[in-house]
Image (tube, rainbow, N blue to C red; front, side, top):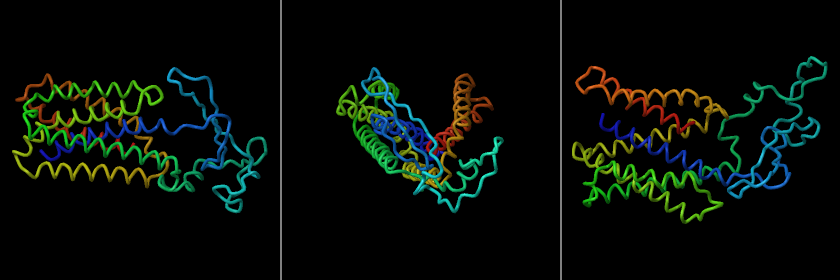
Length: 288
């Protein structure tokens, strides 16, 4: 139980860091200025248009997906011989655009449809995540080996919200990368400092708890990453609404646990839902 509790805490921290890494690295995936077009994987022309600059200095871009004529697709994603003649539409003209079922059958896995830009984007995301994990681990070890571990964990935990808000309300177009890297290092360092008392208690109970929690967290993260890569493109996006409902359920259980006595029969149930339910929700958030 202690290993799973520690793994749940690690998974939640990794999920938040991973989602922030996606948010931060997403700024680099921008469309080029001007009405230049590039072919997409679905056999269409993806055009990017620029409008007036926003308050951050970058340009707001709108992507318009336009259908190209069937004859204009020379090296398309499916050859002309493989395209079956579609049934006529209501007006009598044949429908040349493939149906949703045909696109799903020929799309393959998410791994096969990754472009060079997406691969570079995910490399930056995982590099940012690995750096944050290293800083957090170093801060935890330092706090356990020094008197910093005697500080109440709420102090560095609440203090970590300050650089986190700074990261959310800054942009690489208006602030230097050094400032943003310092804010990220401060957030991960304070988060590791806040987890130091929990790690210290776990090590006193059993020295194997922390390695087991690390192995469980790494396995869950790797499994969800592989699941999202080999699934159908866009299939994991369906988890958005259920995961949002799960977050509301966890919030309700957390609030209810504040008013339920420890001696009550409901307290173990609420604690288990908050522990294992939170572990499952944040694990699925990685795949999402």
